[in-house]
Each structure stands twice: as structure tokens, then as C-alpha cells.
Length: 210
Picture 1: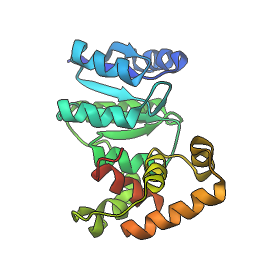
Picture 2 (picture 1 turned 45 degrees about the vertical axis):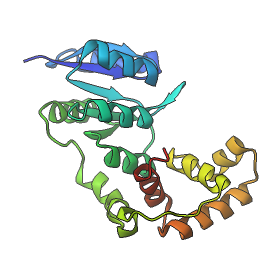
Picture 3 (picture 1 turned 90 degrees about the vertical axis):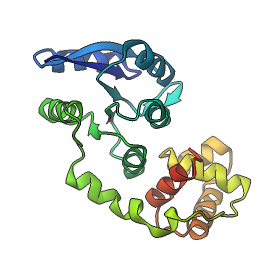
């Protein structure tokens, strides 16, 4: 039985490649979107069986789109498809309910297998991916309803951390020095009681900061 897939990716060449990769399968590409906003609208219009969603796109972050889609369509399988093997992205994707996470460097067989698992209602996460973020997702402090006194600047830095940006990228984004960002990150980790950026990203997701 043919299953309908919506592709959300801002690179036309990637969308074209996916058509070739899936042409001899039972997965039919029912629509394409080049931005997060277009993807959200396309889901409402096309009612696909699953969504293959890029993360870093012009005009919107795919992980934010994932969160919004899961609120309105909790049972819709959404597979993340990214060029970035970033543990912060993976942790956020798990926390937000993605069906799996496939790198753009993966083989066609891996992509097809993951999509078919998601379409069958199964988890397509690998043990390795889950192992990398288990500690972040299980950190006890995060489940407690504790108000953490972050400054406005620390909150801004935390949001950028949760989006997967490096300290250098955050410095450029906020117009502050690399050393200042580094100092803010240390303060943030200490205040919220976590040991690394991945745990901080999950904490931010659960506090609805991103």
C-alpha cells in the first residue's frame, strides 16, 4: 500500500535527489516545501502519512516546526533529515517526539528503512543515537518545576545553544565576544544544574524556551 510523504527542505537539489531515491519504493512524495512555514501549511493541505523535515533552513528552524506539528498532529510520524550530526539537534528531536533522525550522508537503504519504520508507527531511532542523548533526557533536575534565575542575556544565549549554534556563532549572532559567550554558557550550565550543552538544550525545550 502506497504511503504519502511530504518533504520539507530548502535545497531543490536535495528534494530532486529524494525523488530518485524513493522512486522504486512504496513511498510516494505527495508534496514539497522549501521552508518551515510552507511545510506547516502543506501538512494541513495534503494530510501526508509522514514528513521528512530538514533542520537548518532559510526562514525557519525545522526543530521549531517539529514542535508545532507535534502539538497539532501528535500521531504524525516526522523524520528529521539533516547534514548535521549534532547531539543537541538529536536531543531536541527526541524530546519533541520525532520518529527518527537520518543524516544526509546516510545510504539510500538507511533512509528508506527509517521512513518505512516511521510509516509503520515504529521508532526509527538507532541505539547509538539514543545512547548519545539518554543522559540528557534523564537528568532529574530537568523534570522538576524549578524557576531558574537566568538573566535576559543568559536566556538569549541558552536559546541559541538549544538551536545548535556554537559559541562562535552565538557571539556573531548576539554581537558579543567569544569569551563573553563562553562565560555565559558556564553560568547557564551551573544555574540549571546540567553538565553539557545537550542537557541544556533538552532543559530549554522542556521549559518552552525554544
